[in-house]
Image (cartoon, rainbow, N blue to C red; front, top):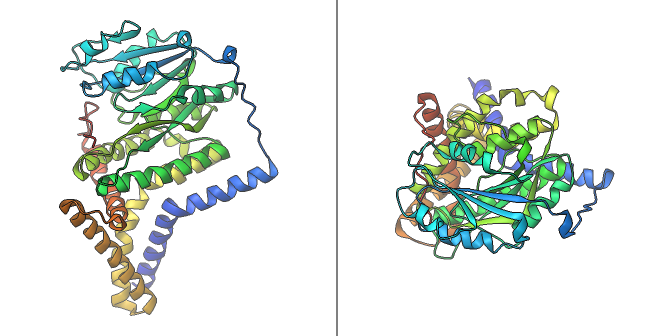
Length: 394
């Protein structure tokens, strides 16, 4: 039994460390080595004549609180107006969203009473896209002025099939655990994506802001839960590179509460597991090499083994303290219990609206992993609908 629990302890610790820290260290080292042995120079042309025609597609469901600001923000972007088209799909919206869009004659509106989900709305919009590049962005996010310029410059490289922008969370001093934790998480994710892109390719884009070559768009099963991730990974699977552009970013507020953030994370976890199953061919390291390595390290482990390892680490550690009484395992258990205590204090701080951010990160970390268990259950039951209700934002 001692050997069994020892193996469980070290295997769980290794999986957790690699999933959340080790891969980042390995990735950083590989990028540093690449810069030394194979330096790359960005030879982007800034000529306006070189800029491609672009269509921005916004799938908006009941976004009357944001849609006017979104349209104004998009029309004001630093990009030649004659080369930029805006298309808004409001399928199923029962509020004033379609009527607000109609106030802008330069915006193409697609609306139908039936709501079939985001990917269905996107597919309905694609026949109206006549430009070489299409940009997808959420209705409740605002883009920086140079977002489109920064995205499309990468397409001067014919090997690039998609470009992901950066998601930034507007965290204010008054924001609680969900805001602080979410903001720190996305900063770390952005660093990983930047290194992923520099090494070879980004493994999946966030729907807040990403773009693709229009000719590479392909139908996605309408029950796909995270279509942006699936869509860009399929492009990478075809041999194209997915670049990351941190100077093109989408701003949005944090989730209004931990409950709202948990709702979002459960859906993402269910969608991630669904994607792992449907893209199982990408697990073939012999065939896809670096792409598989990045995909498994950055995504698959977090949606499969890491949450299980978190639970096994605690259970095996308790057993080892009981069986071996070794000081190392006693110290490890104390540190684990301290971590869980910090997470509990984070929950208490969240409930009482206290601003002690040191406790917010462990709390958010546990919420993320708890969401994977719930997401896995939903995936098995098939109970996660594409007609999900978006998380309320602060």
